[in-house]
Picture 1 (cartoon, rainbow, N blue to C red):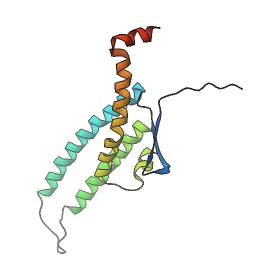
Picture 2 (picture 1 turned 45 degrees about the vertical axis):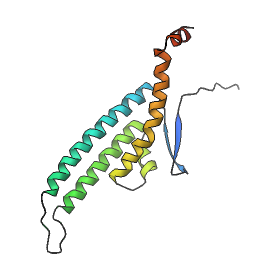
Picture 3 (picture 1 turned 30 degrees about the vertical axis):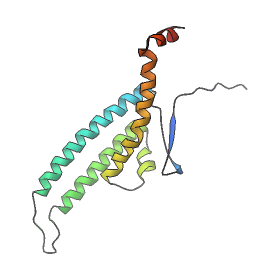
Picture 4 (picture 1 turned 180 degrees about the horizontal axis):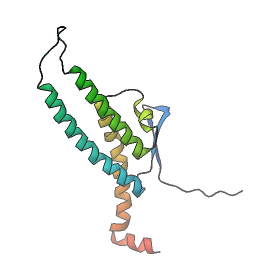
Length: 145
């Protein structure tokens, strides 16, 4: 049987050179691009909200009888909730299981920043290429052929 091969534009990236931990996405797909840029906006808003809550927690400088800050527990809860939110959103955009492939069981805010810094150049490059097809004068002729 003959086969039709279609280049969908999917990019597959190994996490930390581990072929068992792969993130796949298609930055040329307009639906993906909309979800991705929406996620970046949500991430920025969540980061601002997180900072406001951290600042409020830091105002409490009390310690318990062991010298442990009384705001330590609530700070951990805030971090866990924020990481859970970001994992959920990443899985919504990239597909179920992406967060586990990317981060394993770790939960730090820094890993999310690294994720977005690593993925964004692929998305931007693909989107620029897609947009240029339709914004340069000669490309209209090519599209209409």
